[in-house]
Length: 230
Image (cartoon, rainbow, N blue to C red):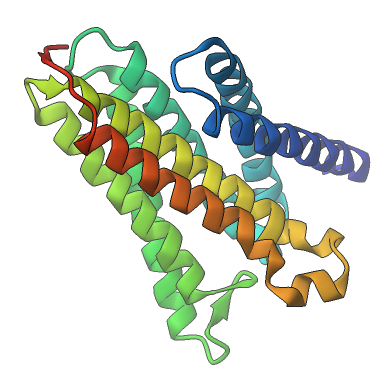
């Protein structure tokens, strides 16, 4: 592919990624369900999905070094899409779009486990630029999403707060992947060497994970809601 096109895609990927990280931060720490949360949440959704798609394309182009970006981008898209679908569906039933998301998660999981297995058999313990544990980690997240998809579609009735919890953890996990890519993944190269070695770049991921746990516990155990059917 033309170098100019690659650089343009990279510029768009980085720019959209920065916006998604910022908007995700505002949405995460805004009062849930209110105007600012909704507005910045939508900005996060569209910039995150766009950045993930471009990241997947770049991962395929530079597959010898960044193939894992392709898998991470696909996982991010399914997380955000299924999270949004959870709020948009009026009835809890299978849909072509929802089933497609589950199928993509299944294929992503299988491919990541296969690649990780090849990496384990490699003398260096790496393949396509990354170690086996990175592929297993993403594969584990894809499996968790797949199991969640199957359980979601099999249920005939769901409590409203569990529906919100599903929306919450999938958005947060997508945000976690975005932050990881920006601060501890390929994006860490833009930071000074002393910052990279200080451990500070792990803080955004820690904050996101702790916030996700906090909101999940609050939503699941401290929110009084009636059971609704969808």
